[in-house]
Image 1 (cartoon, rainbow over the protein chains, first blue to last red):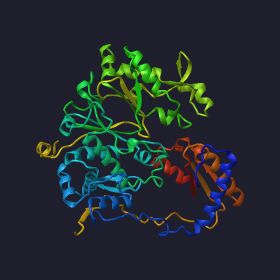
Image 2: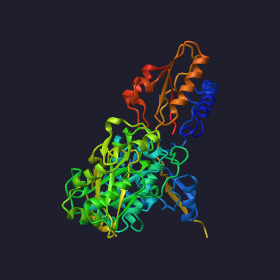
Image 3: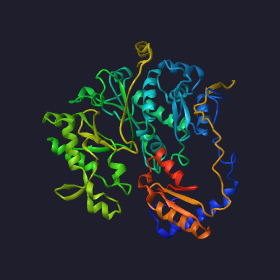
Image 4: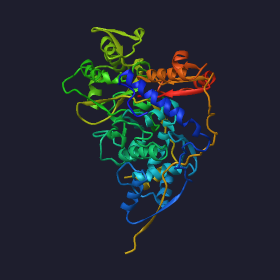
Length: 403
Length: 101
């Protein structure tokens, strides 16, 4: 049935239901084995495609096939892909799993092909492999991230010594442009989602608007300016481990406070950014408040808060206590609220934004300035952090392919 | 000048297609159990209730099973578990899902 179904009068919904029933009863006899639509993009691995012309001709051909993100790509020649695969000891046809929505097989070679296209260096392969593994965990909900109408994309957060080895930007502009690692690792993930997973906008990826972060969404934590323990240490890893954390995320929402000095002042602004009505875009709160989300503190905000003796737990508790929406407001907007989960605030009974304070994960990133960001989860239930595994000759690869 | 020939690798993931033979089709729905699954999005229940009404008015002895009444936990847009799918399969001869959004 053509959209919409939600947000229209009941009689219009019933009319569409009637049409659906007639269509269903009219077509059931023809839906027999072998006649249902089959995936016609099944092709053998390592298929070589011959294209005449310049590099632009390769981009044009790939674009026509729907294999790009709209930007020019680096042609994935056999030599380039072979070189890309030196970034891992895993064999080319090693299978990581299957990727929705097509349930296509994810091989190291296919990751490498898309990494070449994105403009990655071979030393980015360990990050990509770990990130893909993380996205396959059920709590990541890749099907939701890939296919929903919401605007979200996998966010990659990199921790540990690999940040310096790959020159991952963790400081000024960490979520912006200009750094090859940030730009192309995130871009490779998008190409992997599309080309291996088979997400196609308007067909299987039903995103209404999309967002710029669909192109790339990758940053490093500014551990050097973090007044507390790095994020991956909080998640149980050793300081010297290199990790990548994945979250199906909405776009960052700016937390701008140039005036606040105390933790309460700064986090009151953060709580306000968190407490938006659009967080409750569904009728029921149960699937929303139980998700992990990120508060990315700029170093100056983080240091002001830590200098006052506050821990990350204090930050989490404050935002949990202060980020809420009045119950009456949500009720008036047809939200179904479980009254046993309301909290009492100075303004009256309110709906909390988190199931518990631990759902708000604290990260420090960015450079000088009074800006932080709140990043909401799109479908992902909890952040997934994976330790990055390195090939045997990692140091040699860093020397050879480093900037 | 001869155009350069590029030999590049296909980035598309391979899909192993398994033929499961398709779901059984019925010529007649008389006496059948129609399972109605709703993902919880607005108006999905309205849509499916109307679907149920039309089936009930057209075929005798039909039973409609509203999964959101039988087991509210199946009403989700965030993935139905194997156990929930098993329950749905046991309760119905045909399942009609309403996705909505």
